[in-house]
Length: 216
Image (cartoon, rainbow, N blue to C red; front, top):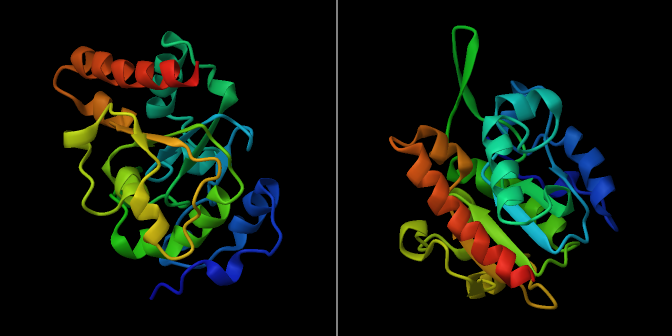
């Protein structure tokens, strides 16, 4: 049964302290079978924050978010639209890898409401320390964690919106000051699964180009 992460979060933290403390989190059962928790990478004062669902297999092994195939695709797209990847702060809603073991392979399983709720205190503590100009949700799980369960990426992807008002009504979720802009797009892993990867990739880049223009 998920206890939630709140009891594992140190007081008066900075991002580096949170990155270390998350390794001791037993707020849900995902920690039992993973290599380690994966918190974030990038400067905490970055103007752009990118939020995904959870670490994958390679991320779990290396301890960094977005370093697998989806991460490499993300870096490529950022560079092509003129955004420096090393100047972005990259994180996930859920800090442990949820998977199903199939022989030697670990197959990604979508994070459920229990894991998302249990991990939310980490996400909340983390966001309270960030001051981005733009926040990008990569995929539906991240978008709904930020903008509420009614948000649909299919309806609003690529639109530069005010920081989600719904965040103000979620317990302990920070109101960004100064306010940021918010944009939702595909998760890069969805591009890798697409029937026509080139079309999906070009659409993804078009969304990121909106972000690049906003940052300029």
